[in-house]
Length: 249
Image 1: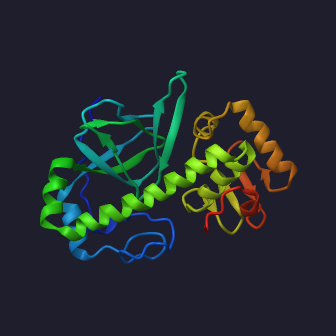
Image 2 (image 1 turned 120 degrees about the horizontal axis):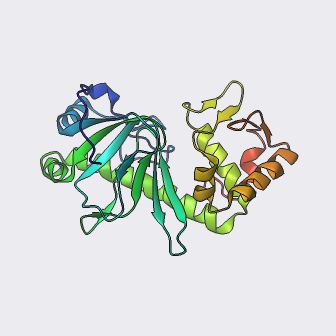
């Protein structure tokens, strides 16, 4: 089913471009988001079409579809995934508010994209963006900086999946969730997992039963405490050193 544009009016103030930390020096930022100029916001607003996704597990596009647009997630959560050689699904990434997605190759999308929760997106025509980049070099720089940031995150994920054991990979993901106020209560140190156990297993490249055992390992080490199926208390002091990958490096 094709995505239809919403009647919602886009406020230039909604545009947030998420970055991970202070390694970026190419553009001004606050450590969490790039600081966009009023001109950047107006340009993005002129180019964007609003899309409301009112349900979870809604397909946004499929691998191999003709790539006509890229998307900025404003609210909600989106996953991108591929079916690997053995027929299993591998979730490549979860996209949070402030993330662009819609990677393509030879004008075709290279993955599936689905909503994890009701979401609000801004859709940008690739053709219109290419024209805007020629007219607004600062906008092109913004997209480049975001792409470099996402590449860095992807490299972290590759190292984490390839070199860490499952409990460490799980701990790493829990700390990722703790970076997002949408699902983390900083006062109580409680994270509410925004995804299903199946999604979590497919993201970590493991069976659901293995993920349950990994949770038990973390709980036995008193690094987490399960409050319910989705809610976990985190020991934010000792959980980071437990991870194989140092996020500060």
